[in-house]
Picture (cartoon, rainbow, N blue to C red):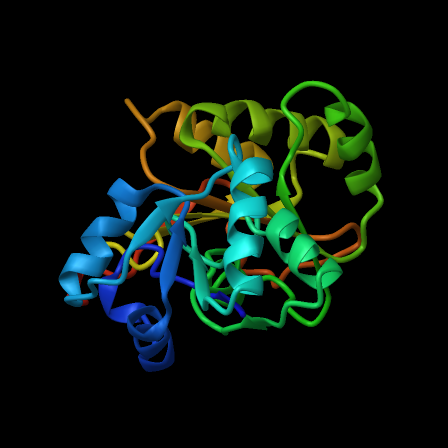
Length: 246
């Protein structure tokens, strides 16, 4: 049996009780990076054996994991942070398990785009999750498609590509499109920057360095924000400094 176990995206307290039990009970934990996962496992005193499973070895390791599960082993798949298979390794192994009729159990739990969307202030009733935009081939085609997307758009991005992506989105969607950048979710320096694609680009261009994990939430075409939505400048709110983090 394969368990897909979400792990905290920053605050170690966000691991669910069920996830904790599964990680202790399975025979093996497949980790995106065993060194990163070791911090979480040590924190909770979990001594289950681990093995590496990531994008560069998944074909070879998937065959090994499937063989173990067919022999009766229970395996948990975790990534460095968040839910396996959501812009992280997982799809390939799940597909192989289903082909071999190995049960797959997905636990609910942390994933970065959900709290970013929920607290963004943009519509949440209909949205499209795009993960990471292509960095080269297919990027312009994807941006052109998003220009006519009526639903709220949710993206992941890395700090070193943030300015490029904000600029590309502004060119494709219009620089006055309402948007939010959520940074370092659940961590001590969590912040939400709200504004337009233009003002957000200006704000982050003025920062000496952008760090941390990022989620972009962009209004769909035709959305009309409330009159008090910030348009002249980005409004940045640090919303987690009073919380206890690990």
